[in-house]
Length: 350
Ligand code: NAD
Image 1 (cartoon, protein in one colour):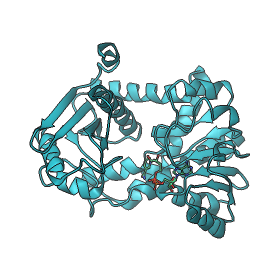
Image 2: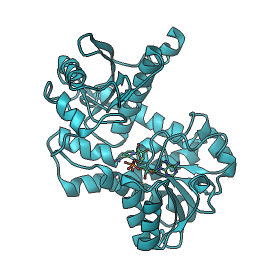
Image 3: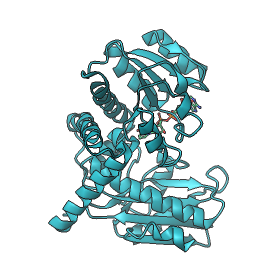
């Protein structure tokens, strides 16, 4: 309703895009182009109502502004959602119609794959517009960069906990051994961390046992593992009112998007003395590589360096949270807003 929408009055533009012939109904939200073109994925989801879709696009696009600016990227924040079932409602015509809507925004918004869309889908969108990233043959799989950034974020978290960024002997529970989780385990094991792992796929678990001598636990219990750091790398919302009382880790630092079920969980973690590395800051390695593709400056070493610098950003968030008493999640948002205001004051993006 309108009251909820007022929470989002910092957006530059929201477009409800329809194409009767293909059955497309989509929402494109441009939160900010202050730092550069608004970049963010295209989600396809069977939202129950249009209102739900609009609110998701508004929320996620603001999140992209914060994520991009905290990663120091020349990109603004945007997000689009196509309303429909990704398995049954998707068609070439629908994706191309969506591409034409993106094209109509003349580059203010750059689409990319997300939940419910694939690189192949983005290739279809790309038949209608240049303003699309994440195509096959582009930067490629962003997961190794995401994992490298998370690894450095975990080192920063370890330093905050123990005084040293050395992971040797630290017990780290990795939930989800997919694209990111597997690479992350490699980095952690190489530094002598003790891995505790879980995945719904038992082959992936067996591989970590074989490669790194990991200890396996039940997927339903990994959040409660006896460990120093809990790294959610599967689904969102695993940090919730039910899981928090069971978390034994001293800190949470992982790749998953939207780890907190609701923002209030940040305060609950702080109250219990569990340190939280804000998800959108620590998992920005992937968008750093996508950004390099968008700006045509793909340089592997530079992307690795920028992903490693996520560790410094995480440390600065911890320091400010300690100094101010604010939660780490609030500090991340505040830093993002400050950076945005400074850029705005400095004039329009190039
Ligand atoms: P993925 O689909 O490759 O891997 C997810 C893994 O989690 C799978 O192996 C799956 O079996 C497992 N899993 C699912 N439910 C589980 C459960 N309940 N318990 C344990 N394991 C479970 O995804 P990914 O690309 O590795 O991404 C992981 C997370 O990181 C997601 O939340 C994603 O949004 C986020 N993320 C990924 C990137 C990236 O570059 N891939 C970038 C930023 C954020």
